[in-house]
Length: 261
Length: 268
Image (cartoon, rainbow over all chains, first blue to last red; front, side, top):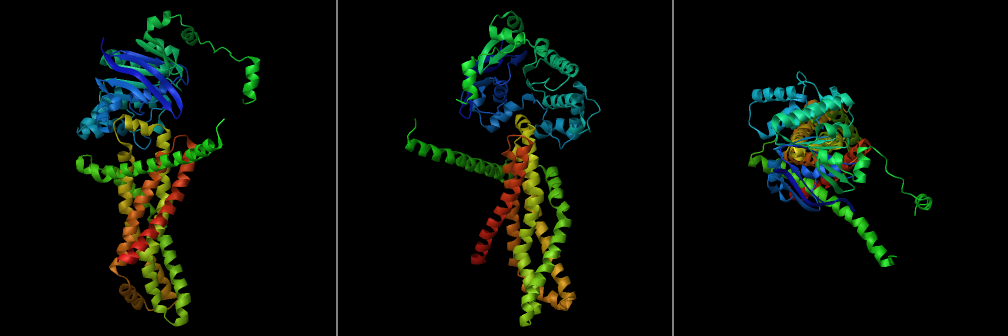
C-alpha cells in the first residue's frame, strides 16, 4: 500500500502554546482518510499544515515524495495545483459568480480558451448537483449549495488529493448525508485520495476507510474503521459512545480555580 | 521570583517584539506588492486587466461627482481668501495666480488623495479584511494564487492611474471655481483672468502635483492592503482596521506631501 502523505515528527506552536506534539502518521493512497478528534485537539491546525498554509516548528510533511515544509512558494504552488481544498465555510469569492469561482483555478493555471472552460465548469457543477446555477452569486445560495460549489471549485483542476475541513459543519442531517454520498462517489469513481477533518461520527462511519484520531495534540489511534470499532482505549470509547469528559476537579481544586490562583 | 532587572528587560522585550513584528509585516507586504506589480509581469504572470479596469471605475469614475463639487468649492474659497488680502493693495488680478498655483501644486492632489483614502482606502481594508475572515484568502493560497497579486495589484494599478487623473480633473474644476467667483463677484474680466492663469502656471507646477498624486495612490493602496491582511478575527476587527486604514493613510499622505514639497522646493 502506497502512501499519499507522510507526516514525520511534526511539532507546531501558536505563539508559546504547543498545538501538535511530535506526531507521525501516513495517509494511504486512493482511500478516504478521516482525521477525527474533539474540538481543540489540533485537527484544523494539522489540515492547515497539510495544505501548506502554515509552516511547522519542526518535522516533515512528505507529499508525492517531496517534503513540502522545505519548499519555496513557487514549488509549493506546483503541489497545490494537484490538491483541492473544501473549506469549512466553502470560502467562495463573494464578488464573483459561481461560474467564475469554479473557473478561477483554470483561468489562473491553464491556457484553455473561454468556451472550453465554461463546458468544464458546467461538468464540475453537474457532478456536484448544481447544474443551472452558473450565474448565481454565493450570497444567493444556501449553506449546502455553497459547499457543493466550493467542492466543484476544489475539483476544477482534477486533483489527486482532496481535503475537506468539517464538510458537515452547519448542515442539516439530510444535506450532510448528501455530501457524504458525494465524497464516497469521488473516491470510488475517480480513485482520489481524500482527507476529511471532522468530528461528526455518523459521517465518519459512512465514508472512512482509514481513521487517524487526534487527542490533545497527539495521535491517539491510527488504523482502519474496523480496528477503531474494536479498540478498547478508554478515550476512544468515550468519543465513540459520546460520553462527556469526567469531572476531574476536587472541591479544593475548584476553590483554587475560582480564586484565580 | 524575577529580579527587578529581569522585570525591566522583560518589559522592554514585551514592548519591542510586537513592534519589530509590525515592521516585518509592513516590509513584507510592501515587498510583495512591488514584486507582483513591477517584477512578476515581466516574468510571465500578467496583471489582471479586467479586475484593474473594474477597480478604476470604482475608485476613479465613481468619485468624479464628489471630487468636482469639492474642487469647485475649494476654488471659490481660495479666490475669496485671496481677494480679501489682494483687494487692500489693489492687485485683485493676482487672485488668478494664487488660485492656479496653489491648486495645481498642493490642494488638488491632497484633496483628491483625502477623498480617495476615505472612499477607496477604507473599502480596500474592509474588502480584504472580510475576505480574510471568511477564509477566502486561505482559499486563494490553497489554489496556488498569490492573494497580493490577485487582490492588491489591480487596486494599486487602478489608483496609480486614477489619483493623478482625478487630480487633473480637480485642477480644472478648481480653477473654474475661482474663475466663476472672480468674473462675477470680483468683477475681473474673463479674458484677463484666463491670460493671468496661463501665464502664472508652469508645467512644473502641474507635473509636481501629479507626481505627488501618483505617490499618494501607492500609499493609500499599501495602507488599505496592510490593514486588511492584518485582520485575524471577525467583524469587529474589520471595522477597527477600516477606521485605522483611513486615519493612517491620511496621515501618511500628509507626511509624503511634506517630503515631496520639500524635495521640489530645493530641486526644481
